[in-house]
Length: 345
Ligand code: PEP
Ligand code: MN
Image (cartoon, rainbow, N blue to C red; front, side, top):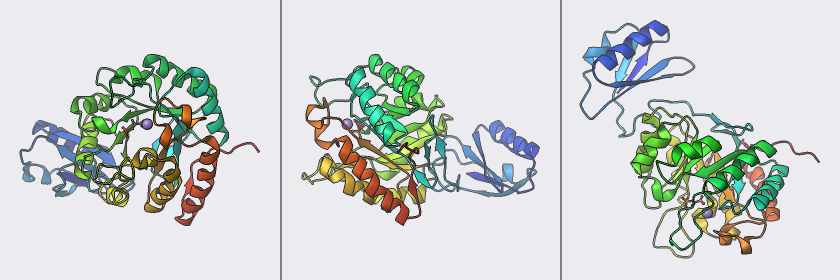
């Protein structure tokens, strides 16, 4: 249920409504917009009696949220959520940040080298996995905390934000010490204890869609994080499993405008994992931006043939620089722009 406060309602009126909601055994999630405050009433599935709240001072309207996800829905929060990270990249506004970097943090030297190159192209967020969810237990599993330390050093040296995947609830506090954005991978979209763990942090979360997850399941996964009080959630379409084998996954481009209608959270696209092929990353990045994506996350490696993971879908830095130029033209065509730092000529 959503309680819409009158434009004239005072902070005291809002506090009174919150106190009553809590007295009735529910949780209140206030959200102040430009004109008015709305209060989400969240609890278990017991129906809330609207008459218990309607007569309170400052209340204008009460209506049910029909979607099973509440805090993630546009009903609760009509305006877009805007998330700004270290180094200034801003997700959910007009400008579109591009996160880029290797699939895995392989070693310090190569990570600093690629960070420097990407920073030189204006990229504000470096990606790199320290804990890697690999299909085979014999594949490289990531550098662990050593990888996190390398990412933290990138942050210091280059002023970039860093994003990395968190695989377990136990490792969430450790990752949170080092990085600016906590990534939940496709294999963990429905790991509810992990979602609760990142929901306890106040660090932005990049929640990837499960490869067999529906859009509703993705939004309910986001709801776990939001219900924990972490309001900074971004959703990421990274391709789904279908019968098609020409590409690693099928990029569900429908998900972008569908999500933009249903939720206020920024929608990011990962064309690298969505296709599994470096030669498709540029066209799918353009398609993502044309469809309304609020950000991109792209794998880039100095020498993809030597990459420890995901070389086949990684772009060389030169190809990535070309991609930025062509995607910028599409962004301009839809009245947006890429969120790149000004680069010295
Ligand atoms: C990754 O970003 O390297 C990754 C493992 O992504 P996904 O969870 O989408 O497969
Ligand atoms: Mn990868």
